[in-house]
Image (cartoon, helix red, strand yellow):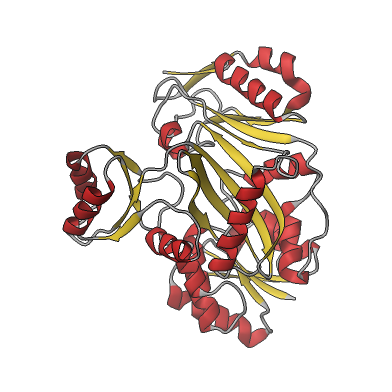
Length: 407
């Protein structure tokens, strides 16, 4: 099978998709934004060919590049795995008559109000929402639904640009910041209370062949706003044994069916609170924050290869072992500036050395990143354990013990 893969070098784990495609027998042509000479030798060795473009999000330029490849060899698939590339890839795919995720599906997986409209019509429970650029319509929505509300970009990823507003005055300020009324558009949603988690899958022909549940502690919006919090997310190995996860899995399958997702990775967010289980949003792509690395360790599997086998052969290669739960904890500097040092690391290594997966500790003198930049923006540590509750307790201990000092 001949596969075009979009942007093989950035972010760093993009090369793993190329590796996996090549490993299962695909001929891989990549399109990216950097010169071919900037690719590392191993990545170049995995590729049959490489084309440089100014932007992989420039639709016309991408169509020309893909059509050039098609003039040289038959193209079976065109794949993208980065959120910002998904819609462009789908439109190029349709323009060049290549099978895969449709432009409609890609749009619904990116535009949050349209996504929720489609899923509510399919019977999937979601928060009430509105998308648009009319201040009057948004204020009327706020009067109907009440506060608090969530204001976010229509096509954003994660918590970037997302705000909780508690009053009409705060809502108006958020709309002004997003230039609503001057051409800007936002998604406005009823606030979901309760616990936040995510459900990730690899689907083949619309049928889930691998799935995973991970939990946030605390919820993302709180985690991205409070410096003192050392936020975590943990993949559970209880997904097959805890009956309550059956409801999450059933909801995920309804979402995949309703949005007509065929063969792809997905990343879905959900809440469980006073209204019961509620869907939040979906990306038609793998999760961020290198979550697949945790799933691989926890399940004795190579998900990059499983994804590639799904694309190339239409079947999985292995089953998940569910041997471990695995999680990451973000370690925030105590202030903005540059890294001055670390405290408590030796104690953690002595207590939990056998359960440590890996860690990232920027060198002294490294500039700090803002906490809003995410879980892997500064220092972090990843761990595993056969018991989910024990792992959570261990990660809590890391958060209490390890201090990242800055000046």
